[in-house]
Length: 505
Image (cartoon, rainbow, N blue to C red; front, side, top):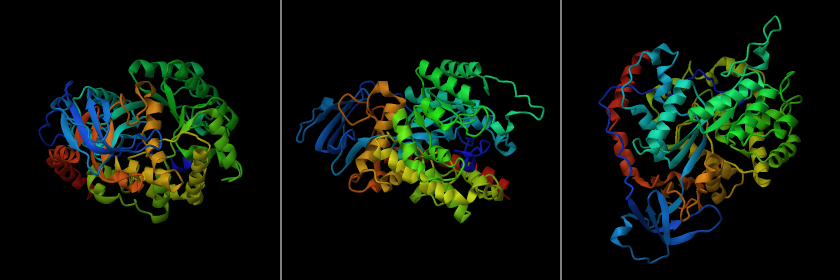
């Protein structure tokens, strides 16, 4: 986010797992011979407007093997049967912009309360976050940067999930590369802080940062806005040479070595992480300028970049500014927000409820900024710019999992058809983060990362919340199984609350 709605980097939302009970058994590795048959289901492939009714879908070896016509006779070797009558099979949802709470961050926390809490080896907190993503139909998640310790843990989790030893969605882990803000880059004597690979201010160090990320195994690069002009260009171009996509922030404007709008679109990211990033480009000089909407949308379309609007993020920030409170989390998801995250959502940790946040320049235009971003996103859609669904969770008020459903509703409200919303939440993200491994549609040969819904999302996009279960890597996780796995950690959750209760007094 830009300066006027930026999330505090020091806020560790829910970054904790505490050893208050014995570790649960690891998830069993998937059987190569595991086979499933979803019988008599309505298939919504989502790569076009087609709807396939009364189909039987055969899954084996983690992929969709066959989609059979109505009345197909199943054989014993076709696998375990999932009753699809009255249900709808859609591609698994992907959160294309999330900051996953995880146990690695707590180990390096500067917060003495968090740092002083013990951790076990069971990764219980990690497991709960991942299971709640599955509960919401999220079978893929792209983490857009964190601390070194957080990233190390996420890279490990990514590989554990891929090996079938940890339940959870496919993870894509991004490396954030950033430099100092222009306002603080120069010391009083005029000297510029020395460039490093960790905070590059030269093209050479920017290139080295990308190469180091590639060697470490990151899936993509997140350029951040405080890279100067030449370093930004070097990072973007080196990522392309290394075969890594870039999704992040547009460069800072208005300083001697900052980029300008023309430069940013001449050296485009693969994906722009917020529509608000574009709104920021319309605020330079005269403030929010509706006349810039068409020009901005056209510049993005010509550049070939896709956009993750994160409209629900701006909406939530505006709500906190106006209401002076964290918005309610939908349905029973409020009960899923763990006590550590709750602590970070409340004052004084929640900077969005602080007087300093309210007093900053431009605060009175927050609501206008949200409106501008919605209109701009609609113009991007009308020009055919690919949109993806991202949430910026766990920003206060945005819980992991359900916030994906909230953002899908936001996209529907600006005009996308239900199938276009499904496409943004799945296929477009697959094309961005994993283009060599299929399209992400519900088609024969594609990976079996799927959501089974109890009601038709094409009739009402709110039905994306009615998740009967998910297939992830070809393994069936009905809601009953997810809930049972979460229940195993109920004692952990209670113990966590008890340990943190004295801190609130």
